Length: 295
Image 1 (spheres, rainbow, N blue to C red):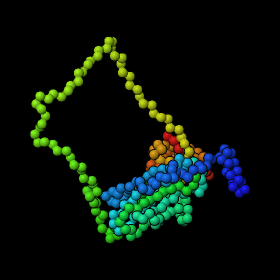
Image 2: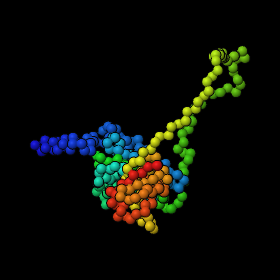
Image 3: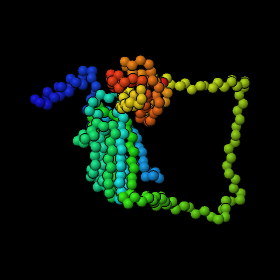
Image 4: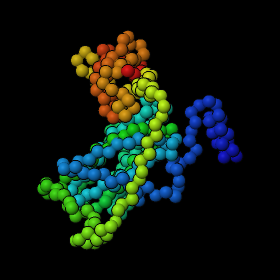
């Protein structure tokens, strides 16, 4: 009886014109083991790295796996920056993070059970890690969630010494190459085959060539979410969850409901943009936490 009532309620919610709740697990296949093919995070000369991407539960892209190589005993810091979509419908949105040791045991996490649940920036630092291959697991917790993310990683040796590269130790050797004789053994009477060139003359003059100019797409203004704001003098600097990966650029205009005029975008990152608004924080809060952004 309880199962019947629950199924009836779920069918009513889905069928009443509301948001379609995905009924799958968020993964394309239950048999796939993505952690075995995790993308390797490459360190630079300063032993720092950066990776970015996007996730969508509805599109069966719920999780991302990354491999983090620790070269020696040291300290590993992982900073996760999250930008939820501007039309997010889940007020309890959270992107979780897990760090697994070489034995696939969870040694650190940031999920719904931690104090920073729902935060758009999460940082985890692990000390005295042993050398080996560690895994970073990012996954959405809500069926209606999607998000862009950036992970910034840094590593320090425990003794404070410089991390030396092992290049070219990991470069594979070339396979055995065929032997080439010292003297040319090509027969003297050998002639390479030739292909006859046939020219076709067409009557009449050629029409003038008309160059087609590319048609630039028209970008329509869109609604985006305000993810942060801070007071700077007489203005309030807002951070918008819409960045250059979606076409936004410096000089675009921002408009808020209930506030007269438009305001230019001052800077953009791949996942967010900033703008200075000549208004008070209360006026901006009255705009329902969203803006209209466009060229």
